[in-house]
Amino acid sequence: MFAGGDQQKLQTGYLLHQRGAVVEAAKLYRELIEKDARNYHALHFLGLIEAGAGHFDKAKPLMARSLAIRPPNVQFIENYAALLVQLGDHAEALLTCGDGLKVKRDSLSLLYMSAASLLKLGKLPESLAQFDEVLKIQPNHVAALNERSVALAGLNKDDLA
Image 1 (tube, rainbow, N blue to C red):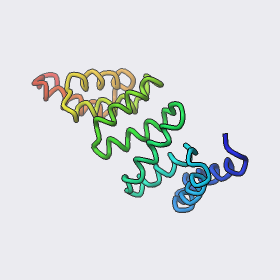
Image 2: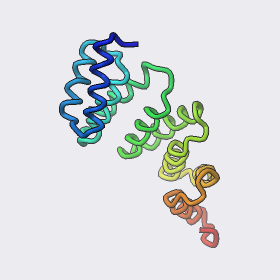
Image 3: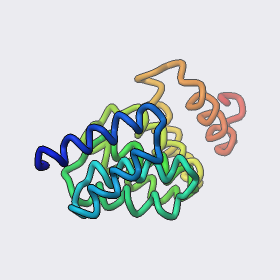
Image 4: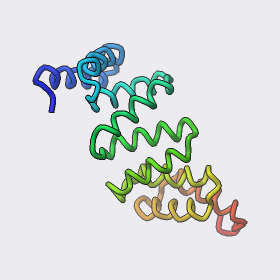
């Protein structure tokens, strides 16, 4: 996968990242990317740092590149979909969730973000069905219950909402 030193640098960056030393971690990730532009871990983790700092214009392409390089990684897909939802790019989030659900059909995170994106896109029957999928896995998912009620109200089913 990576040369020994690169793997060590990635692990060090990840540990720093986990401990909140994001400036130091980002420096290591950038060094790894400069050496190998296809280092999907460094791309993704640097994207997470940029998103955490509110630099969404930098985060989005980094995370998209990381996903384009490797076969599907559900956690990376979930992170990218969450960024897209946060940015209000619900159409792209829906596509990303769909890709992730092909890999892991029972990803609660992807099912929920898919349902929420469908709701935001005005696809109320589809969102309702997707929220029902979320609630099959986690019956007390508060956000899904709340947004399911919004979808029901939008479908003029106030008695069920």
